Image 1 (cartoon, rainbow, N blue to C red):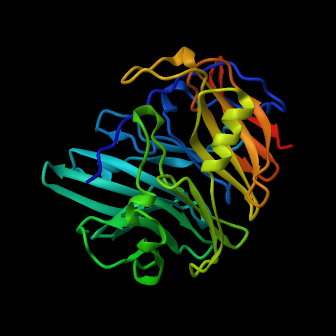
Image 2 (cartoon, rainbow, N blue to C red):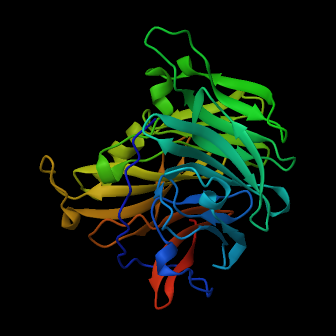
Length: 340
């Protein structure tokens, strides 16, 4: 089982281009990181967050800040678990929600599952995905779920194996793709990656009939057909170096990635203004920036820049807009920014 580190949300002031007038999301619901389902315009909270019985239930929100569907309480449906973590969420058809979760019954008893909830918050299906653990999931209009993950029983020297598994609504495996030897470090290419608070997880998103994958260990994006055929792949290390030079900062690191189309991504970056001291978190040495990147030319355009401080307020991309969270009197509000 992977160790999940909870992240601290720190709000800062940012320059807003096109604010949305929407209802606020309550402050007690906002935890980083988030999961934005661009295909259906849904924001999920508490991804990679350790859930305990005293915590509020899981909720999701539409892009206007209104709650989507009913609350979801894993402890009501699994009363014997001690804790749970949510590896990822996906919005499904007819208001359904898919949750890739680790159910923790004790120190040596865990289950990696994909859960299906209806719009009223009732548990409708449980799929045991062993021996896999999920890094990211997405769903199509037929209720099929694509799980991006690695095997828990993997050992050094094992043969390559598929990292992307497709399950039908009954929980049957109906497709396998993206073998682990695609990446130089094998399955490590898609694992939760980074330094402490900077950790970023893999993502998979079904948009416009294609699958979009971000592999954080390799800083690489892939565009694939739904059966796993790779249409294009692009490494982003050179873009990060170019951005750091252009912005005259010590280092630029990816905090999240949003896909706009087959040739463009939005990178939400943490920029370190000066050199970093080992084992020291200096918020004043950091700011955020979001860039639109052309994957063919590797050219980039600034969308917004934050003030000094760490701000994981990136939500995602919807059409030609970037969405962020900004603090509001009643909690947090989703804000919209036009892409250049």
